[in-house]
Length: 224
Image: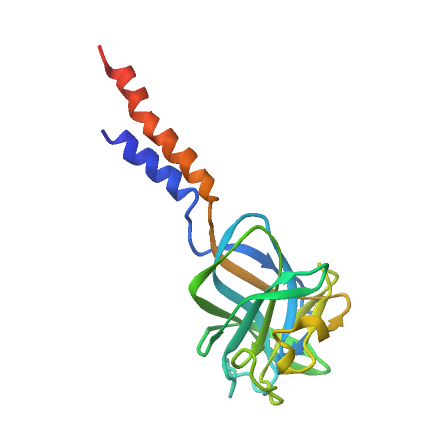
């Protein structure tokens, strides 16, 4: 009698593991871009996924004092865009996390100044389900689609030679209209998206159809 429940749990656990990395793009830090307006970079989903968290590696540019905190920053705004022939297209969704978690990860030296680096993770309220394909992630300091923050406290850490070149919005009012964004050649940001793989609806019918047949197989094996 315990065979079927155990079998069901194994099937479901294989497809509904939450909090795993569905996209991870990291490399050696070579620079940063201030997040006074926003910065975008591309990513690919190999499977239909539920995005539940956004994690980015940033540098504290407000102060060169190494105290393990980012002083005076105003939270993390984010947007996810469709891919339009190698550049950000229509916006899919956006949000704002006023108090994302911060983890001190080390230091980064630039122009003779040593800055602290952090991993910032924002939880998406009401997970976003995306089909497999190419997309763009944009983040900024402060609420999404508000006025420029000329005194940005953080910069998105960059690496060289990975993926499609990133884009930087010219002004905050262009955040939802990437047509006017500037390209940043040969640079890529460091981030990861956490969540879970979401099976296609058609797969449910196959799974449960098979599971419904399991008792028949067991009955045939145990009957006299």
